Length: 156
Image (cartoon, rainbow, N blue to C red; front, top):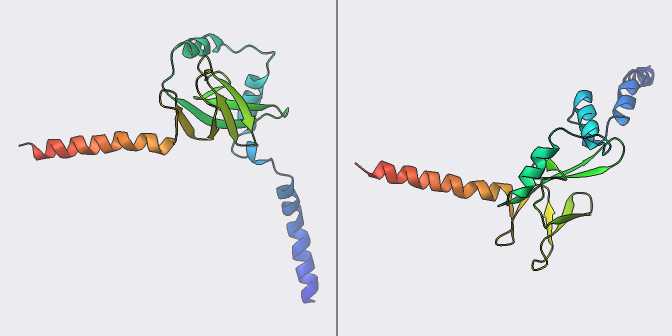
């Protein structure tokens, strides 16, 4: 009798487990269908995006930092690389990317610099060639603010 109850309970839970097994892969886990449709529309190379002119203007300006935001695999299977918050367009002139594995890219700069491997969330400072984590960049600014606050508190 007890085994019958266990079997019935398992059968009742099985449809929920089957739905979990066929869930979206991690790349689409945190997006809604509307967001996925928008990302797919932007990833279609035959479609022109109104912000193309803005992206070209942003690329014309010299970049102080190059941040690798991550990759996105569209529903068509095409892998897109996001740099400085822009898909494939946030890279300054003179640089090119090459994917390395699933979550890394190799950034090739000018002829005088050696290639750098970046993980998602890392930032390259082109002037020095340093590769830093995003949180390491934000830390000095807050330390300076704390030092300024301490200096102003000491003044009468």
